[in-house]
Length: 172
Image 1 (cartoon, rainbow, N blue to C red):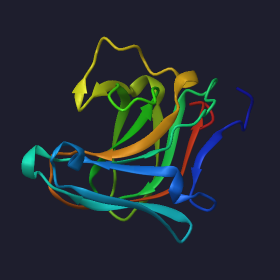
Image 2: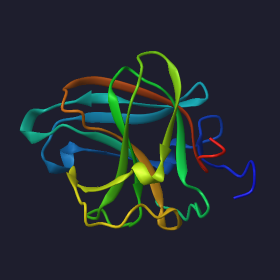
Image 3: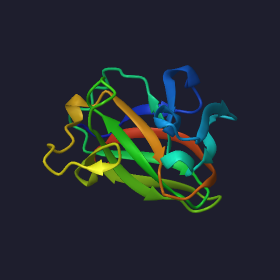
């Protein structure tokens, strides 16, 4: 991949919240809530995780599109968090009941950070269960990225996102 060829997947300065879809545990009877909105040049993913009714997750994802990540091997996300653990997700199939690949990161409360997430650290999962027989994440097939909180802790959460990009580890 040529120098400076990072692909910006999200930029809070020019993004549309309509391109993102919230999906919480209420699809399975849980009671977690979340929202994704744009404010002051960044996105805010916030809500409350509830462990009631076997719940415990909230997520948001970019609507499926051809992302063209060939040549990339790393995602980098610039976020300001609340000290909780989040997962960055990559989807390769438009159908909802399919595996996703995810990689966790822990935020520092109130601090802007850039988390470097190499594709080879992503694990395939389905409904929170590891799928070790699934193939590794293939950047050419990625159609959507997202964020997920499922740290088995109830309570409020807030993650601010400045930008998300795909790049090579050497450029990050």
